[in-house]
Length: 377
Image (cartoon, rainbow, N blue to C red; front, side, top):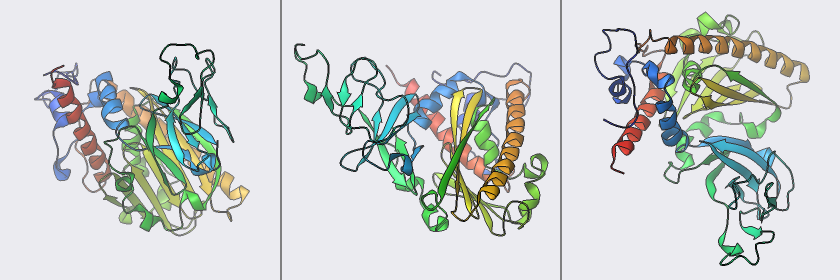
């Protein structure tokens, strides 16, 4: 069998009775499911399959709407290795243009910006309209069969939702409405659009991106890993529900510490976007793969206008504390996955249903990747 290759761990483990690839691909029932096998977190073959069959075929958080509010405003993004330029056109339309000049692949922008009249390649000066049409190419007028009007930048799909912008490279990705189905009604007024953006904090983590997502998708670890967060949540009423492309963890708040009484809502959108909603505050998170054993997590903080500077600083201090605890355990898990000692473990159906849901979506993507690579040619 060709395609994604999953080699056996070097340790002699009698539990591993079949090729780990088959264990990774086979659908599993929630009540008897195991985790993805360790090689899914350590081998480059799986990273390639994810780039092609997960990230290139899903909706990715790429910008805040406020970054691209007026004509010529633009923000840099990247999906599955493809550089994108999220830009508001003179016609008011939001576009996700490939940030790759059609001449020699130079960048049209190297940082976010405001009010650009056109997009000019930083390499040789080719210029493009805000809708991606080539406007001019220096000293190309005498080149045979060169037609300016025939050249334009490719575009990804784009969707605006709750004050955020999402993009998808693949035309075959499901409609964006399917990605966020049912979330609007539960969010109510607690959305990024109704909060003030405060700051971004980025964390680089020495683990596979899926390790971080796995950790996010369950509250099972909170009592062990987060001694200051655990008392704020009601473990007995901590619930997880799943939709086709998302899941929600929710818990009543204890009404002490940095949070008032209310509810904590933790949404996850396949594969790597999170939305954390608490009274008066909100975070968006995006987990960006940097390598098979490295990722970056970008946190954007939003607050209701009535939340003052002191409360914001306290919230960010508390969030940093929780993130550093998560980073430490995720990096330890990555070392365990890479050790050769671990194959796969049983999931807890009550506490880890969100994790199972994520793994089933990945198993589908792995099966599709293996099928494509087995096809002749």
